[in-house]
Length: 52
Picture 1: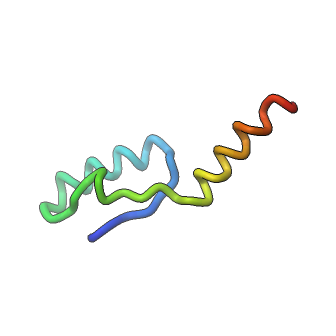
Picture 2: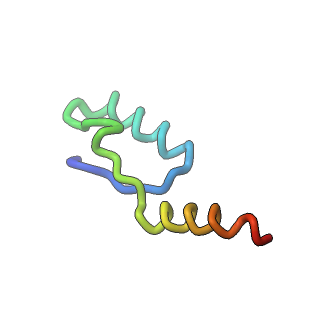
């Protein structure tokens, strides 16, 4: 596995840790890419929060 893309959920952080210990060639957190759509969604929610 060269890389993995997922959202920012905490269980995904744990999954990366498990993969790193299970697969010797997996690079762990440095090979994880956060889902761009999820990051944009979080930013938009943060910007719009004052208007709620």
